[in-house]
Length: 355
Image (cartoon, rainbow, N blue to C red; front, side, top):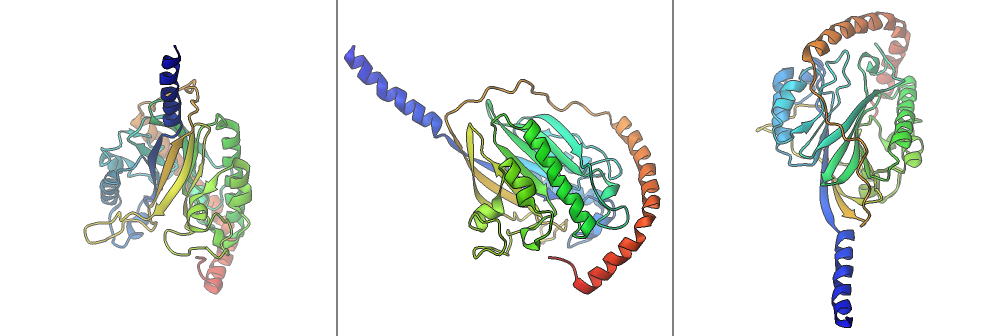
């Protein structure tokens, strides 16, 4: 009997230690594909028509071999981009073109569940600001099954752009709204990653203040600050790295869970370019690699696991027509912004474009 006990105890301890220390790599890409019709054709280093550019970007993204891809400004040419991404069978349905859509989509080789979209309650600009109000910017949420029975929350965002007073105010409210969503819905102990185009840089020292308005209340951390700025959220800190992949508009935030700890290893700019080095967007894609480690705790499976349902493309197209007319009306009403737009123009001439 004593011999059996002595033989069994080490085995039990080793198995527990092995389960509690299991590690893996999680790679995430955030990429603003500059999919605004016509405008995006000029935003790369070469002129490329919208649908053709979407195909090229789709092929490049398909070769990244990552666990999750989030796209922004992925509007009217989404079907051309998505058709090329055969290595990522789990994905969102488009929310429509520029008039009604968010321009946000997600792709993964891992199962994705419970997708949910939300538009910002506050955005600014039909003619001024960065004209954010003519689209339905916001965020898309999904639950990714990283391993069998291991789930992680992921959010892809596109914040209000611009650094004028009213755009800053809108972006600060975006942070507030996202904070409330996280606090209300994502408190089950699972890890969380928020990535996308935040239109925010710490070094700008503006009043949107992502640190106090989003990071502190949610417990999220910023990969740039943790990996490249010595864990400091002060862009004036001695370790501040102004070079790529430094303090950029495209960001990746993270929070460990009760079952998994996340440790950012790197944030890089993958060479997603054409054969001659041509770029098809005015944004550098961001690739972050995390090391994840099992804590040994097993969380119960979510009560609900819903896969994306087939989409009625005809109904989506009909709604798009209605949204186009609405946007035209909003732009006409937005003529009252002309004085503000003129002031913006003078500010641009005097102070230049903020880095």
